[in-house]
Length: 163
Image (tube, rainbow, N blue to C red; front, side):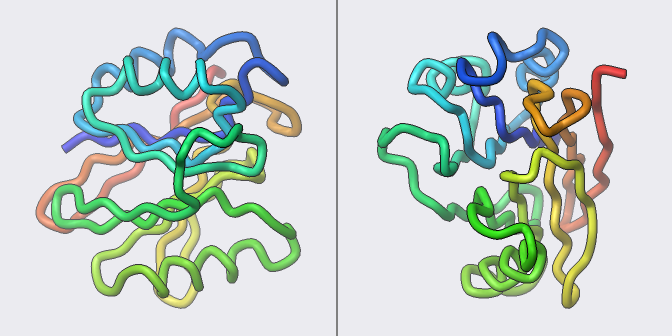
């Protein structure tokens, strides 16, 4: 199963559109995860139109469109816990790991956004993924996303960017 992982599109406040190469990755995916900060109802709808299946959460810059702060989804034998990560950057990784622990147990990966910085790290045995900003919204230096190939509980993550 191919999973497109994006976040922090920030359209229209910091970017005008989702880059074509990101749209193509979303179309190719079996499932898309967006970790918040769409920035508008229109961007949320655009992602939903591009993706066959989607899991989304609310970011700190999102309008009130009925999104939850944390979602879980089981894909290819892996449970993904998705949250934006709103809050201080001082304890960011620990805070995300705690949210993941509260919502799931084994075979779990945390997906987060907020920092606009790519991250693939492990905290207390929990893998945390941050795809950066799909539009390269500041403070990101480039547009980026992650693509995960997930099968039978195994996950292989690849970074995609516009460089």
